[in-house]
Amino acid sequence: MVADAFLVGVAGMEEIEEDLALVAVLLGPLLAAAADGGLAIYFLFIRAQEEVVRLREG
Image 1 (cartoon, rainbow, N blue to C red):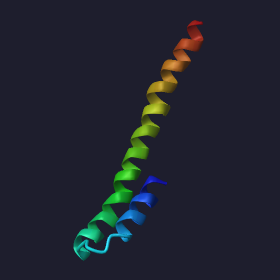
Image 2: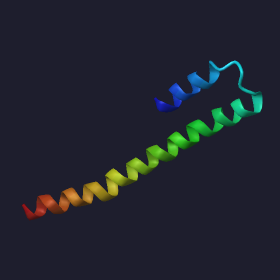
Image 3: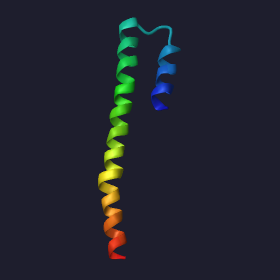
């Protein structure tokens, strides 16, 4: 969803050069995917383990 909003913003810019627009279009979804992956790893492997330990103790 964030990547889509970014792409719409880049597409609406008329003064942007073609090469810069291509880099933005290719790099935006890649950065968004990396952020999504990082959040998934954080919640699945770090927070979930802490919650399991907390539930076992309590």
